[in-house]
Structures are given as C-alpha cells and as structure tokens.
Length: 175
Image (tube, rainbow, N blue to C red):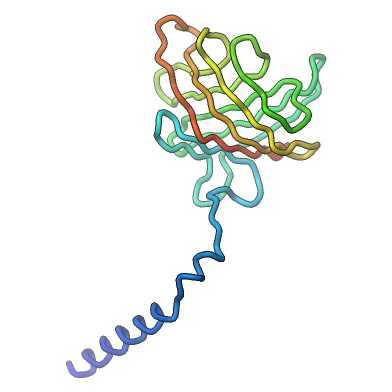
C-alpha cells in the first residue's frame, strides 16, 4: 500500500511539473485554421450548424475538377460531411481571383444538399437566392476561396424554405 501511495505522489508531482513548464506563449506559436494544409475541402455553417468535409483532419471527402467546355472553364468543388450532406461550388468561366456574385441569372451555382428530404438548396433558379464567392487563388492545379449564400429548392421556388450558408471556405485540388 505504501508503494502505491508513493507511486501516486510521484505521478502527481511529475504531472504538475510538466504542466508548470508550459507557458502561455507556446500557444501563440500554433495556428490551427481547421483547414488541412493540402487536398480539397469545404467548410461552412448551414443555418448556423457546422458543416465540414474534413474528417479527422483529412480532406478525404471532397474532390475538385476543372474542365474546358464550349462555354469556357468549368470548375466544380464538391464536399460531403460525415452524415452525407453535401455542398457543391460550381463555377463557370472563373479563371482569375476576384469576387463573384451568384444568383438565378448566373451560370455559376452554389448548392447545399441534405442527405434526407430529396431537395437541394441552391442559388441557381429561384428568385430571392443570392450568394458571393471570393476566389483568392486559382491556377491549373487548384482553386481556393470563401463563400456565403441563401439558397432555395428549385423544384418548389415559391414555397421553398431558404437555407442560409455562411462562413464558407473551400480548396479544390484538381484531379
């Protein structure tokens, strides 16, 4: 019993010394943006709830493509969370950094599709939908930026609920 007591005291003392040796300055050296340093990802808040294609720090549930079409360059970044909900950023003719406005009269679309319900809330077709994408970097290998939008289900524009997506961030590494 005496050995156990001494062991517990030693563990407590060692732990106390370890914690005391850490300074608050150490935390300033580590910056965690939540985004992985490589690969594709999408993060956002959907009606205030967090959405992330980043699972355990790995951006494995997102993908990106870049294609040349008769209408110009088409870039698609698609990400899904652990529940199967998805967000897609589909950009038409975007080849340079800048701010791009989304809406029903624009070829580019942002959409949120929940795994249940059979609907997709997008900026594509309904009046009153709007969004903004800020492309911070784009080249032949990747695209990065931020976004926000208000989307409706295009099958029921007049009666559809609106989904508000804020604080969106994405990186698409083209496959």
